[in-house]
Image 1 (spheres, rainbow, N blue to C red):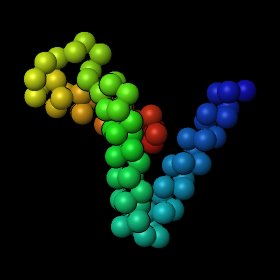
Image 2: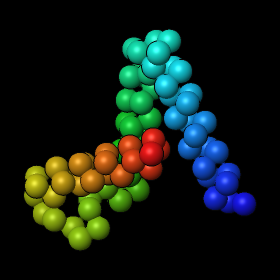
Image 3: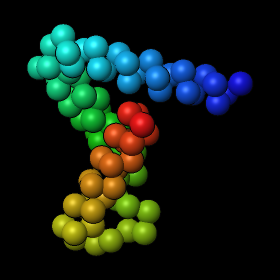
Length: 78
C-alpha cells in the first residue's frame, strides 16, 4: 500500500512539475530553487549538512552540497 502511495506521489509531482514548466518556466525555477534552499537551510540548522563520513574543510562542504543536491533531485523527480 505504501509503495503505491509513494509511486502515485512521485508521478503526480513529476506531472505537476512538467505542467508548471511548460506553463511558466520562471515560476518553476523559483519553486525548485526555493524548495532546495529550504532543504539546505534545514540541513544546516539541524547540523546534518556535512556528509556522513565528515570530511574536513571546504572539500567536505563542496562534496556534501553535491551529495545532498543529487539525492534530493533523484528522490523528488525520479
